Image: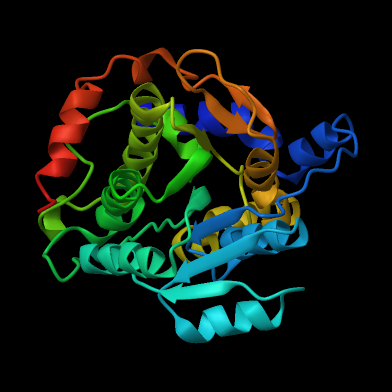
Length: 309
């Protein structure tokens, strides 16, 4: 009953805001400011479709040099064919740590520093799966390898001066405290993709605050959520949700809007970063129970590092 009540409260509170209705109402007050990304190199993960492809398009239109990363060469080629300009591409599976190393090696070989990193890739797997290192694939994709990639770019001095790192979370994190248990599973019986997704997205918020506190003199770190967007992931992972809300779900461009806006404007942040939504920094907690966490950021870092060489 408590779970059902929580779900009803969540959808009742955020439903109109997270849909296209909230986006269109807020857009009325944004104005038409123009910002260029000329001479800026943008790296986007999970870029072959949905929100990622919309970010690629928005950054290309703004004049950026874009590197798009995804695991399907065919989907990257199809994405490029539909774009106004051509993005550089790297074929990599963001669930695999070795592929993260390949991305870093490719960037080093090109000799180009990254001005904007968009940690966009994300999955919700209802069926338990592991990568080649026997690590929960959803955990590796949504959190572990985003941490590995970001830390590697910092360590290898591949972030340009005054760079921006934008991590794409989810409004689902409002239903989860920061806990270690549930971040990832070791076997099918302990896998809960929906719960793990919310916890992983909460952990992205904590990681962003850690990065801003640790590396804020070198780059700006943002975490955002796009609202409820009609993506392939939603259609596959949440078919009932999608069926009920399809008429008012956001399209990919609406979901990508705040990412592209952050890349262009890089607004200042006072204190620990909030979570950006529709071009405004919002509170990272909506309910008291998510503040009552059993883990600290140090525990999260220890947990992530145990899976890395």
